[in-house]
Image (cartoon, one colour):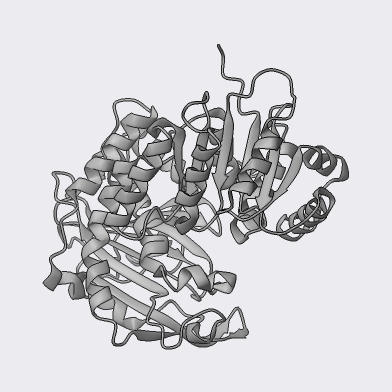
Length: 491
């Protein structure tokens, strides 16, 4: 029997920050693009005691706020017609009985395929899957699937415990662990950029590459997420998942095929090859800091400790940087520098690969005596592009050089972008697991950062502060191997 896609898409935490800012706008855009099956219905589940009409008013207002342009009337009418609303507490069995009543309403055919999207705090995951089991709607029924957001656990032990609990109620092929960075087209195109070009792949190794940088910078502060963020911090919230996933895509070997498990097998090999950080080496390989007050985009902003919901005297890091080494034939000796932070100068994400200096100083008696190394830069945001930086001679009589940027963008000027959540949600609906994370990836990523977490948990007396609106603390430069290495802050 062919898989015609899910008949219901249940959104837990439908009025929360994640659903409002990311999930619902992406689903609306899929509706506008006619990518949703005609029979698919949505059930929004949240605590607020609203009627369906009140929910739809909220839906329209939130879409108009977070989309680039206001909802188109006919598209919104189609989208709204798919929705029902269930109010209730996630821990209350009555909530799930009301949910079951909605799922049991008469409809054509048999409903054997339901998506349960957990747009909620990770601490609430288990309560939901246990209650779903209580109403008998998990692995015993067709192709139901559950989507969980990062971070998956708080450390390696909690991740294992959470996975074991999930597997009590859902099989592994029913669990979709989502990381929206893997839905970005530039990230996906990295595989093509590397493995479809003989120009690139032969030099993608320790013989030619000096170091790799992966940066995810945010101009925003914690906003309304302080309750969650103050117990997580930048290392758990971003570096352990988003940045570590990007590292695996940069460093992985060519998979035998493009199917989901072949890709994930190669990513796990990278994580298993990362050199463990000894407790005494944490200070030299990891750095944390917290934003103070300052100005971002010309506007004054308050310090992290002044944000609503942040504990007095909190030492939670809002900036985390770390250095890793991959001990395999391709990468041994090449440092990978990862950093992420809030209240930095701009929203800015890139992968920057710096190559080694030429092996001989051919131009030492000319104006080109001091040549900067070549770079390959892959920008994820605010613009999606790829380019290679090369040296070329400046026109004229002297032997002076300038940097020439060779654009390797895959997008035509008129081409439209596919927002990351749209890509991943469409994959959820279609059951494609290629861009989702297998548990052994999660487990090995936690193993990599666990020594850092343990050290920072034991040393909580103080934390370095950095002014909001810059590129973070200067002290993070101590991670570099040599004086000529520096953070790349622009495309």
